[in-house]
Length: 328
Image (cartoon, rainbow, N blue to C red; front, side, top):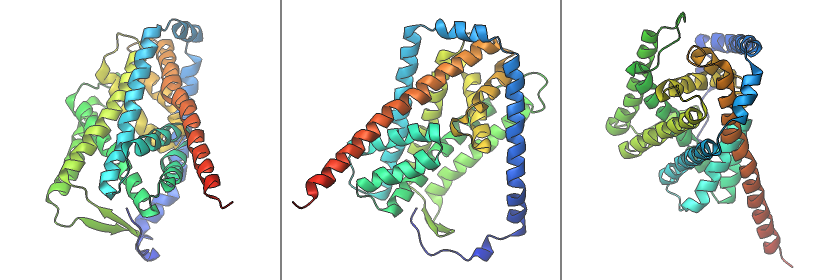
């Protein structure tokens, strides 16, 4: 998405948006506090001895499988940027792009989208000679790939009825199915726009949005959905075997929205609260928490440690290049 002339401020200062901005922060804070209260109440009812025993009983084979699926997930996410390379039509090799995608994803997961998704991409792609406008296009396409992929897989899981809400919840399973149908319609609408829209370019607040081809849009939805499926597969591998995969995937998808609303880096506490709240009627709270702790270690912490080293290597190479180019 490339930058053009800014639009007049008067167009955005509508009464509806003014009221939304007024209530957005207090509503977010209330949601955040409700999750803290929920997680605190659940934490008090968890048998922590069971948590530690479950962690100690993990088989090496299970941890290796979870690590392998994590690697696959990171590679799939990095491929979002390969689509971006085609989108901006810049001559970059996959060996240049994949490290940027992997480093950005690890920092994004642990330190927020602004640090990983935005700042890290700008720094690393700038070193590869990519203009700011093209970096913005890659970032925008990556975001679209992630969330349209989310709509496809969440729509499929929710509308299928495979995800059942616990007894006594105000949000019924039928309401969840309706949400799923809506998400599928939105994702199909995106594909239809990419295929049939005669107008391919819009300017929104000074940013040009260009529709990709249908083929590229289908690839976006497939890769985005696959990454969410792999994330859930990592959790599924680490949770008790009596749980089925579709409910685990469904709970992950619900927790992702809760994490976006609260803006907490890594969704710390939010993921655990949602999983315990929605699955404690199926398995013990202690086994759930133990699996999620292992998930955080394998999917969040370990990749961050590896990518910090990768980033330092990239910076060292860039510094040595600058030194070698200095006139003597």
